[in-house]
Length: 350
Image (cartoon, rainbow, N blue to C red; front, side):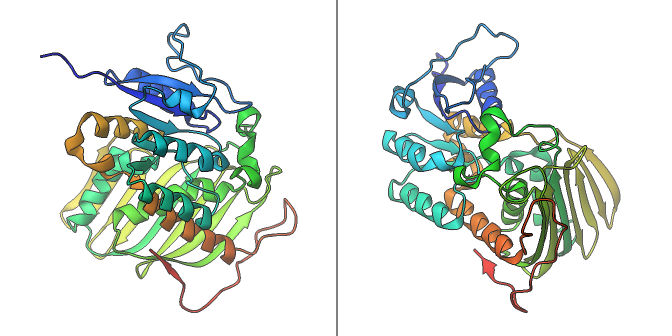
């Protein structure tokens, strides 16, 4: 019996900082291959196999050309290009993995979600924490009641990208609101908001307060903190582009114990004692690996539990509320200021 033909994936856009990660993952998976790449203006064509620079990809002049003969698509463009590229992929009738955010704000996300729903399309969002083994383990432990009901959450996601000039050249759009970028907090906190949504979808998220910082010439903030209400549980989120060395962390305290994640290391303090588990650290290409796996194994279900455009709308509403709660300083470099309390009962988002 012959092996199934590889899934041919069109890469639409290359301006997203994780475009190279997705190209590399597709090229490395024997179940998949690149059908064509539509490069973003000013962004390089990613080499799918850094170990073999002679490997070439088919450069397309339009989304339709890139999608010709493709079985699936990955959108890794500027955020504002989603309004053209997602409908093109929907028109081709192929499953789609779309880099985050879906749009620059909730209104834009709602419009694209409506288009995907009308097309009855399978669109997954590249929220890679859902695909990370360590976070899947956290979710399983919470569902099993290993630490009892959660009582408090702290999470952070940060890196020194703004200090190191990561957002230059083809990635300079990340610092401009008109291209769908501009917020160091929203860029990384989106993953944390989605993580909370995925860990327990029954818990609504409301925003209590937020504080943002400005540094490095971005249109808006370079990072900040937000205090959320996660179904009655306080959740403090920190995210920025100016932390060295940065990293990813999660702490969930419960009535019977606690879970702590640093990178891929999970510590569990439960009634039976403490335990430490070592997992592979979360990585952006986990999303494309998960996407390819769900295509190669239809039994995994739509997206295999990946974030959907409906989830993207929920996250966008939460981040819009964070922006409203934060008192934005008048000039870059101004000190942090406390957000104005909007009400005694924070709005929830579902």
